[in-house]
Length: 425
Image (cartoon, rainbow, N blue to C red; front, side, top):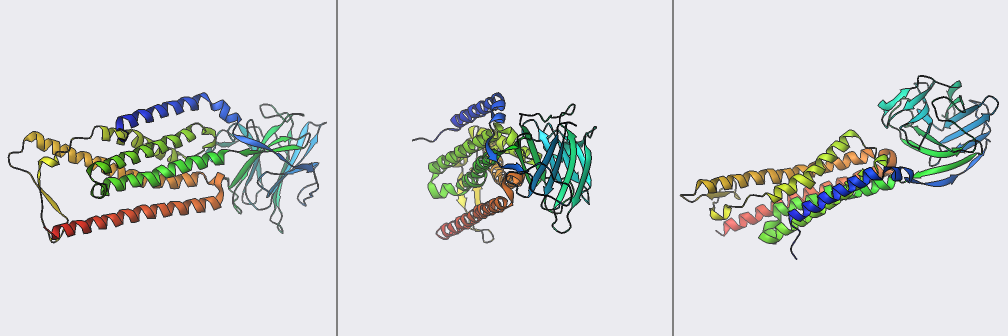
């Protein structure tokens, strides 16, 4: 069976890109409302009493984060709710209310400062620290914080209205999205969080449901597809292009190269599809997005188009003579026959320039693909955790070492073969 042509490949890829983009724009509301599972979380009457603040009526341990415990009491007469949040270590801490369980559009109370005494209300418009700004109206009363010198526990407490103007209200019988985040131990400065999460809370009924996000699985699928493309299939495609002709023959190496290119494009389009249809869960950094877009354009459009418009190889019309050169035993000198037309010379020059661009662009994409995989691991750190990052970086290093070792081995093997052929000339 003949391998798929580059024309067919380009048509399939374009169709998939258009389909996935249309699906992404037409299904955002569905994705936002079905991005995770709701799990019951234990909510109890308050039994923990801290020396830093008085006891409260209820308490709950944040789902997936046993280091953080929330306490609260509701005063119906004054229409206020009092909170205390305690973290088992010293770190900046932020807790707030969100319309949908995400950062954008939420308001939060954040504790920072060298002595963790700066407790303020902030409005959040995005996912970066630059999108977090102190609120014009604080709305907070009885604000305080403290660090237990013996246990290292850090707490903040405050009171806020149940139904503040232009803010998220806490209404009896309705659940609110409570979100939180904190940094590494010993870090008092607001920065990228090391742990975060959300609860669906009914503060009146002491009902808490953990919102288990599917974002981690989205990241896993996206990462595996892109890793398979950039760090496995793409290096194989380069190896086949560089060493396949001598190993598999003139026609077969090109078929294998096309098949690898097809697999690479399918993986990239599928990975892009996963990210594009789950934009809310893909909070990657600008560098990762920019490099990713560049790789998609190069792998899905530029390289296939270069393959389609590949100039004819006129080297078969030349007389090729292998000359034994002591300094470079594998050097090949091409002696052009006398009377060669100007058209043939231009065609040969065009072919050489095309090979220079196409081959080196492929090698550049492999290097950029490994870099992209590394930035992807770093961007996913808040969702995957330190242990998963270590394992992912180890796998990435092993694949990089395998790619470099394979290229070096075949390069030396090819040089040895050329020397043996010259010795028999």
